[in-house]
Image (tube, rainbow, N blue to C red; front, side, top):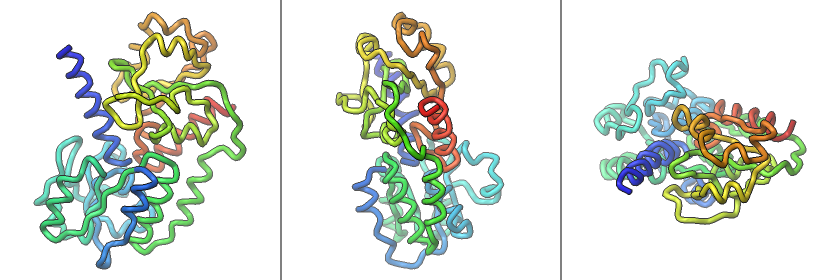
Length: 290
């Protein structure tokens, strides 16, 4: 039991921790979208998605970012200081040294940092994106903050989606094995599946999963659902291989018909960046629309 709790804790750290770094609900996008009281010329971003969006809107406004593997070799951010790396908390001294007008963090993940910064007189904004509409709202909010036009980006987003989606086969997305977790409609992944008219078998399921927007499934439930399409998202290497050792795996329609697809973590579970979202959408088109 103790070992199982440790695994769940690690999983939350991998999925929720990184997910929170760049993820948001419609409601919060609306309540958090008030522009800062003062003009904004210098921004520190603590989420990869906000970093990417602002860079495309007005790259000159970014003076500091959180470290992310997504931008490790991106020339846009080569000379921009990192105020954190991996799962380590942002360095307040580094942030203050940059003298930002605004620091953008993630709801549920950056709260402690932004609370301290607010006490020190720094404007902050917390974001959280778990829907396509949330992505659009965040883009509009950030565009307003840096005084840029969001229209080109919003139009680009629309090219990621199928023109005339039609309902597809029953689909199940699995993001971990112990416990087995699947996204419902209240997650970024679930909402993205809905945009492709995928019949997400976990869409309306509710439960006491350790991560908001996700539900736990048993092997029996998966067999009962018997999806025609399976998508396995790998927060850690070897997840698909691990699932193949499950006794139920070869009994599923998706397995028998070779309709099992492996996706990156960024793009489908964690939006991460615009390029990651575009890649996930291309994969969904190939898996569901073709």
